[in-house]
Image 1: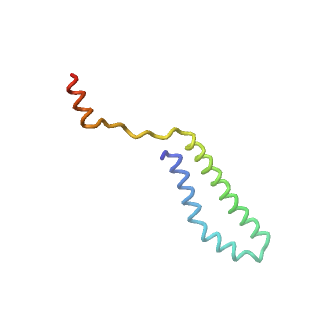
Image 2: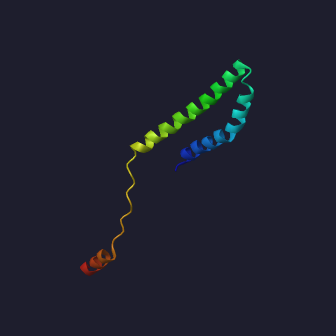
Image 3: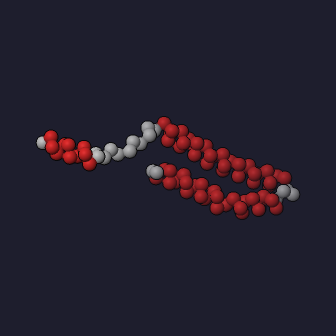
Amino acid sequence: MNPEDRALLDRVLQLHSTLTQRAVLLSHLRSDPDVFTEGMRDLGLDFHDLGTEILHRVTELDAMPAPRPPRHPTPLAGRLSELAL
């Protein structure tokens, strides 16, 4: 994970921390259609923007070559290399 990934995950956590409060507030604002609509739009845009950035990062990660596990010589291979000297 790089610093940009960490910042992206921090944004997810920040959005998560406001969801309950925003949902409760929106449920109380249903009687005012204009304010409710704007609150829903703001929430939707937050999800959209963050989701778009996450999916962009996933596309970058998918394009990266898979890391190869490190090769460790087997004990026999190590002994054979010593014998060859």
